[in-house]
Image (cartoon, rainbow, N blue to C red; front, side):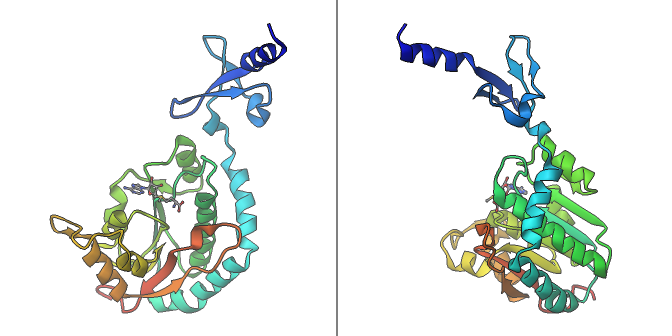
Length: 260
Ligand SMILES: C[S@@+](CC[C@H](N)C(=O)[O-])C[C@H]1O[C@@H](n2cnc3c(N)ncnc32)[C@H](O)[C@@H]1O
């Protein structure tokens, strides 16, 4: 055997099978499994098996993201604007928060993690004014680790489409980069008191919503036009560490809530 094929065989021998929480099998090269290594167990075929996402310590990971976000000028700017301009103008107590399309917190994508810590910082602020009794999350992409983590934080995770019908005039809707059909569905029946989501003007001016986009009585364009006509808007402040703020705005009702 040549030197290079022996080297290849050694590397191959060091490979291990790792099964994640969704049942996907990943072949990883050993022995450098780092953190997960100590938790590996041996499967029936003698290969190492580990439910990787379940071993992710989201609390620790997110506290690092939280430190970066809360010490940023963007956080300071956003919270000050909310406190001074938006919350007083909303004229209602925010009782409910609905978060749609956050994405998984366990798959390593930074935007979802920064979005989560941004949402948490806003919830802390809202809770100084009035009690946000329910914080509801909906995203089909959530893993079991995500759901367990959110539930340990006292939040509720629901399966789609339950959350769309829960939006009411006392809601803070947090839906960064949610697909426009779902965005429209969330604001179709009630205008939330406060919304953070994709820039509606850009959506309406762009080509991503075809002018004939209508399924039965559901007309995405018309719903978003009405949403925009009834809200004031503030572009999300620039956050140096992650681009998720781009194409995203903060909206709040420009008139008293339904029935108030
Ligand atoms: C474009 S991604 C945005 C992810 C993340 N917020 C970001 O900015 O990177 C849209 C997200 O919407 C989620 N989504 C799809 N259908 C949904 C539904 N019915 N309800 C809530 N979220 C949904 C997807 O799973 C995905 O995580």
